[in-house]
Length: 366
Image 1 (tube, rainbow, N blue to C red):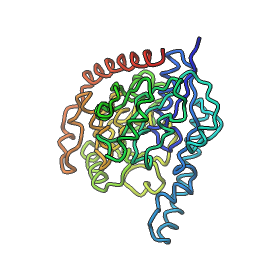
Image 2 (image 1 turned 90 degrees about the vertical axis):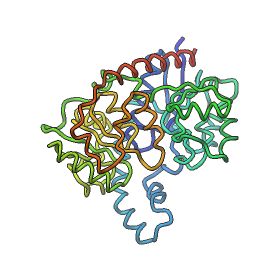
Image 3 (image 1 turned 180 degrees about the vertical axis):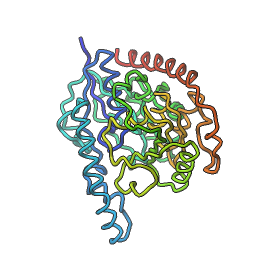
Image 4 (image 1 turned 45 degrees about the horizontal axis):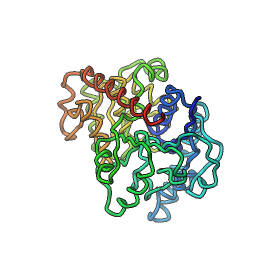
């Protein structure tokens, strides 16, 4: 009999990697013979464009709030349109929207298995505290609960969160995490966790090629996918593209980014994230998922660590032996002349890790 599984993850944040990891998770469980669904979970701090603007402008002067709001509102409306279109087409999401623990406690739970999905589901900093719903605290003890490629987003927990996290983890029957540091965190709390790939990496280049389509531009290009404001990043990318004799293309997640260097792609469709990385000559990014996709589809890349939550980038680069693609200095242009990445070792490691991930999932759902 086909088992039913319902997943809680962060597919409703307006982030390309978050949405694509949810898609990958659905495809992976379906390949294992499961009927898959997602809770329609929307964190209260991300519910509407106006709520997001309020969070962005918190503690800023009134005039600044008005100016930023006027600039960001069209961005957030466009994001909602793009991402909802993709989610409605590709993901099996429940109709009822849940934003609080109380909302989940009102649900009738009928699935065989409940799963905390990937991305930064357990990052208390990103989530504004420990959110018990993301630890499936609303699911009764007798129902199977698993975690697949969950992430704390950091290398260690703060003292204040350890006790509660320990209690929440103890309710799971099987736990896997996305970073090696996550294994260490779980071990410290008495939880046996397996290190597995991000779901987008669990699916190989052949799968993602079906979303890549044809080459989007007639000329060679360096793709920028930048999540954090960083003028040194911008200057480096411009000079790198110039030295390589390539055009600079910027994947703009906000409308205001059109003022930066490069050809602007303003809040593109979700599948364009795969398409532009797949066909790029180089990718320069501070994003985990843009780095992961570059590795997965064998696109040359440079990874720039953000100030916060960079452990996930270090973890994947170390795993596949590509730590030298981490840019250590914005004055270092040695990668311009460096040999192209030979992805044969990385591909071998990913294949081994995929087998390990499938083994974990088969045991977890049996």
